[in-house]
Length: 180
Image (cartoon, rainbow, N blue to C red; front, side):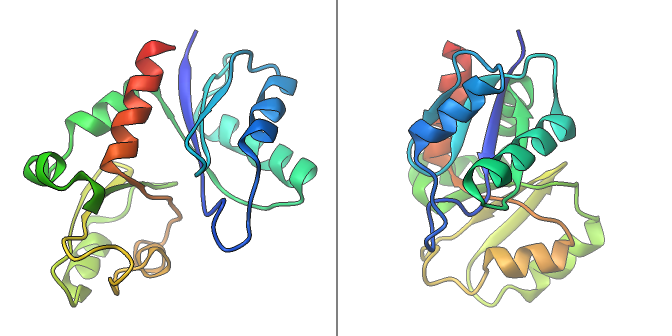
């Protein structure tokens, strides 16, 4: 049994919504028994049934578009990869003191170091970014809503797509895969 976390990009924001019960039902219809969701922001925990990474992403993306008429990305990580994401956090102080303003952004592909440097140099506020493999860690000390460092800008600069989760959610997902 290989447990995975599947994160939907930009779901349940700006009118792009899927009921979590419907998402669970879709996963179960695809043969992912025991699939469960966490929160209302498109976090799915499931046994990949032998599928992994990009293959699992493509299956979930295609089925979501077919069933819900919604084209969106999935970012899939195994339980082992998620533990590594938690362990690799370059901002441990922020994780402890202000976890709601620390975001992990799983990406479709690892960004080039030069692109991460361009992104960091373009920051106008107090935000800080660090990349570790296919994850971007972002500190928003003044809040995400006020920041000029947007997901659209990040994706454009890094030439890949992703979705963000704050540190509180990252830890809840880590606990969910450990209890699966």
